[in-house]
Image (tube, rainbow, N blue to C red; front, side):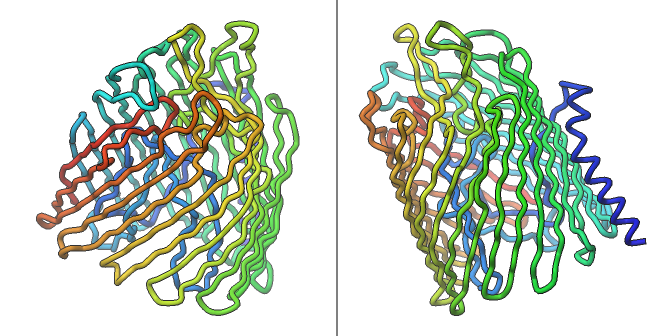
Length: 562
């Protein structure tokens, strides 16, 4: 019976992998998002702001270090906190798993200056021992005047940016596998600064996700597979009233073969089929393969693999990158590691919004602007680093590391002027590389007082200096949090990011200096008050080129658990 079951599973995986090719021949209207659902753990914070700044984004290459299982310290998986937009979070609080008696629902409602709005609702339905349904809704944004930065010419910008996200996630537990299904909807409404060709913009996204993964570790083959039907629409670009539509059929599958002596071999396959309409952009297919071998023992972990990436249509090529990690524990609570990895970052419309919502795809408007604006996928040719982590005293840990990174077709957004003073933002690409060195420190006293600090310095280089204007040279973050009383929780944080100095007309952009304060007070069982203030120093800076952020801003409200 087990033999027949495994054959059925393998057949199911083959069907899911082949599904995108079939769908391309049948439809151009299917939509989905790349999201996986957590079925058993509801993550909950006393208060965690969904967006630290109403327009914040901070994209830096991530550094993912492995964690040795024999070390009892909970190490960070990233060398520096990274915020994403529109759904990202800069996490300031320790996350804890809900206990079985925790309430399944939460509602957070807040309002502040410049119409800063924060609404979050979530409810987990335990339909049965094997079935769970989670519903989530989130609305946030701002509307108010912003002052120009770095010598821009307009006096005030009556800016607004509102985001709406809704999601439904369902999971069912079978005897040897889990099935999950999800659907998501996203809407971003915002306007551009003065002196641009268009005023308002709207992004609409939707998706359907289906996935399965094995839960019986005694199977001869372990598997995980999913297919995602994703749709995204940009209401218009600067040079036409036509909408930009992207349909993406994204499929992933991982098959793992466990072996003796804590070893395993596996392969991950990803297929991405892009379909565009009314954009002048070409349809194309991207395939990514990642075979690897792993040895995972108490004092040593070895991961040996390769990223093989293929594409047809746009950037028709074959690219290879390493996927290797070695870590060793010479003594308890001390980890030494080295890694060399890489691979492809897909530059779909969702990535474009995350990178810079104010950027665009201009159509051919003169001989100097031919229709070559379609973005190729960014390729991380190599990201090699080495470092160590240690916890000499319980509650205290250090992390030091250094490395080198090389990126092909690194994407950036630049302001261009066709007829002064009219400007617009467009996406461009260039080769970039950087060497970096960083450190982290964390202290935790019985979950009552925590302090963390991290810094990373990057020395960037590129043949196109415009690609470096918004790159972060030095980033420093620090956070201190404490329970003042059992009912009152306070967090004070600071984030500094200095930009690369260039010889372009943009020079060096103002550094980010965001001092922020958050507080949560439990007023009554199931009822709390919360407040946060950002940019307490009232500094002028930008997360997107020529687009200022708010000065001193705050939001506060109530949290209900039910």
